[in-house]
Image 1: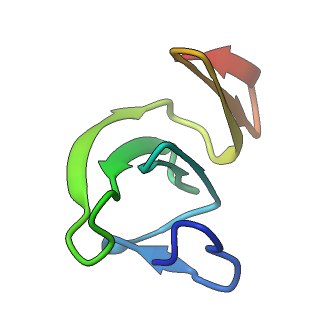
Image 2: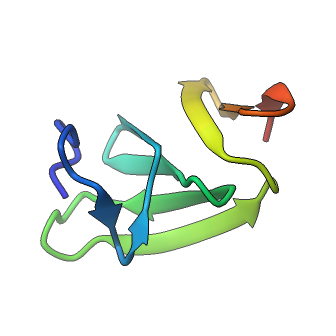
Length: 81
C-alpha cells in the first residue's frame, strides 16, 4: 500500500477497504464490512497494527481532527470514534 496515494489499491493488509486517511505516519482505514483499522506506517515495508473497531456499517469516509477520528458510514452518517 502506498499510504500517500492509495488510489487504485483495492486490498490492504489482507482486506478490502473503502477509504484511507494518513496523518503523521498513521493510516486510518475504513472497510466495506465496517471495520475501522489503524496502522503505524512509519516503516512502509513493515506496517504495524495498532487496533480496530467494528462500527457495523460500510465506512465511506474518515477525517482526523486533533485526537478524534470522524467516521462516516452508509447508514448512520458521521460518528465520533
